[in-house]
Image 1: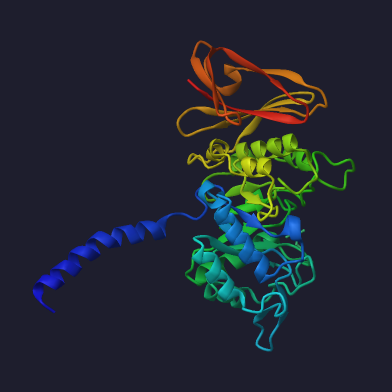
Image 2: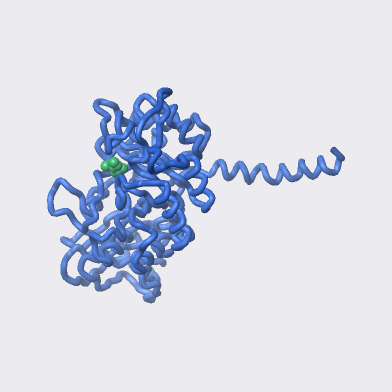
Length: 391
Ligand code: GLA
């Protein structure tokens, strides 16, 4: 090779190597993961056609541009193990195989996620990963999987912390960066150990139901889940998030105002934003909720601070999230069935009261002006107002 070519290659590799390293070094889930998961809307009715269509819809609808990245197949893609113990995808619903599907999702500029379970069987009684952790992890890596949701059904006397550490070690051993979504429903308080075992997000509760608030104590509506987040905020941060379960926005069980409140609250909680609706067929108002850039920017703020409830007065609540630029995101939540006037002081936000701050309404994309000491707004029934307060 001529000397000049050698020099050129040397210079190029000096330029490219740091960029490659930086890309590899970027920590997984440095902001809350955003994506779509099949479970809330489709349950066990999953297929490669559905997943491809959802990847297409994520791009076409503008959700990808809004920041959604992962397309995750939940339970029921798997049917069996072959004589060597390899996991076998359902040949009827996934005839082209999982690798081809992952390739398709990647070709749309998205990332691909899959689901398994730490026990002998998944919650829908498909084969679990117990005893096959390294074998399954290798398979996922060979399929170019980017995200694993790992459930907790049929785990008998297994220890949660050990089981999640085992699958994380197995994933790491493949050399492929794979987000680990711990789905243990909060039973063994995963916020206390999820980060230590290398989990990137952990469910804090049982499954969400597509309703504002549950009428019976055995099920969790959106607000029941919200209440269970109170007090665990400080366990979340870049790379490791509390997960109050996937979004129900657009699935039909709540009003548009209620869905807007749901999305506001999940955003201020720095929760993973995993859409659970049919992206092929979204009403404009649902699309506008899921893709609101200013609200998503609150969720994706690089500081990674989880919002917390700073005020509760019966049905009225104020939630606040500290932003990297020193401003605060605020949600005024009215859980009542009547319209309410709601206010908060600068002190509740951690600001001295003499400070002048601008207030912006994020859903209306409107600057409301400069205020001192406090701010108040009228909040519709079962609804939320979302603000940014910047001194
Ligand atoms: C559990 C999980 C859900 C879903 C189902 C699948 O209930 O919590 O999110 O993954 O299993 O069977």
